[in-house]
Length: 172
Image 1 (tube, rainbow, N blue to C red):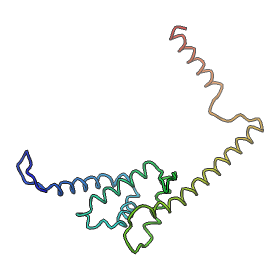
Image 2: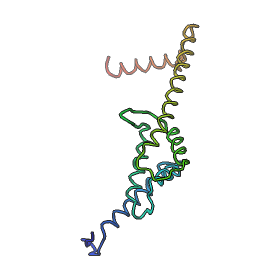
Image 3: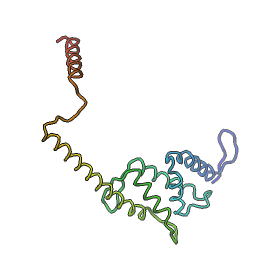
């Protein structure tokens, strides 16, 4: 669809302008992935987004979905929600990118299946770490040692003085 610019009267193509905005968004989005940008880009290439001139919009949409995944660090699959760390996402992307597919990917289901295993493994490890911390805290309490919360008698005295000064300042 062609139209004339209302400022310069030059003839413009709407699809060309849209493609340029998609490419601009792609360029701005890639640094958000940091040192893992090559994995994200490789994963997006598995969806068959070449030639880029024609499929820039699809590439932009895939990058936006990956950006959301990295920011939220959670995903859902078959109505079940999973939490996964950024390192887990990177591990899953690495597995998917290194796998040879005979055809282009249609959706994120294969990535999600890989991430499910990693997310469950991370949840198990987090549970074990929490249990270990709880046991050490329990042992400390049984021995009669107070948990170290960074408080000392000096800091308690200073805090009491601050509270007294605040009360006097209010007029109490």
